[in-house]
Image (tube, rainbow, N blue to C red; front, side, top):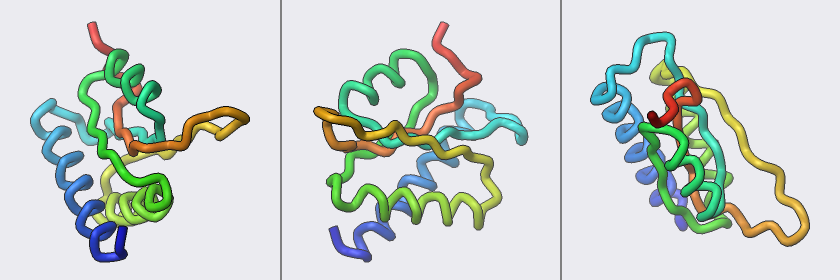
Length: 107
């Protein structure tokens, strides 16, 4: 993924986060939690929380995309926390950046 593609993907992802927050009535003190995830972890997060916003990214571009998204969220003064799961032996490489609100669990 080129730098230009990462920049576009980051802008698009932040736009999607803003839309999801508005559509779901986020209050000013509510925030997104950003996480890097494998396919299985992404599915588990989507089953536990609503809303979620995810994007599939090539593993080699994931770190750069996460940093760009964090920078753009800071510029827009959007609340977020960043969390990534440690990579251990036999762990699949992360393929997704996933955002969710830990206070908004599914029914």
